[in-house]
Image 1: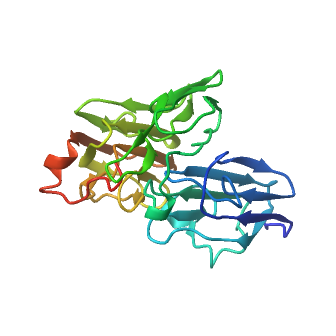
Image 2: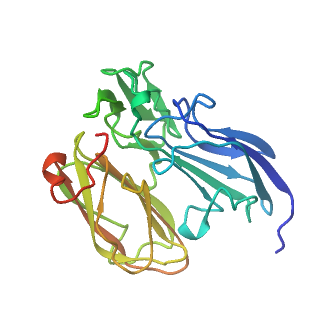
Length: 304
């Protein structure tokens, strides 16, 4: 079936600073996407996903009108379709999508340069299908999240603005997400445990998404060691956030190397969409006190 050359136009603006809203799904023939707080800037610890959905057999054309992110620490990832490594595109190369779906993901570190240090953590934003209670974001303030009906909160419901060891105001946990009640995933707490794909060893379903969040105490780090790993290298993927680099994509049949967080959390997002069945993955996680763990693995949180 031929693709119609009916283009949907979107512009995008990005700049460093503080946050007010974060992500969402956009539909229509045109529109503008701005990073949280633009033009005053986006926050530290941001994790925002925008999904542009056009009509069937349409393409999406995107034009960047303003762009400034902190090199090495902050990233804007673009995916021509679903978030799979094969669909990743750079900002320079992407001009138009090949289909009616385009995804943009903004991820920023929780570190602040010395000139930006302050007593405020900034508004961390609201996840899709989420509700934020609290309007003050200074050191010592607490805010709470909950989800609309039909969705379950994954992550820490209460966030506290604290001062890090580097004298920077940061939130003690990442922004939670709201997951549809009929989807797989969950929140893991405790010093150790195991995460496995659905129906591990029995072959996972041919399509679906799962999101798991692993939380440790503020200042701690988390190691993730895979014991089994088998998925389709072209259409299935496991995305791991909260490490260095901020996002790691895994796929194929080779067991990945261990992953160590650079914060007190890791988030795993598993996506599968094919007609084959595979074993899936299983991984063990372990929490560490940062000071004792740094002696052997030099990836402790820079700002925890």
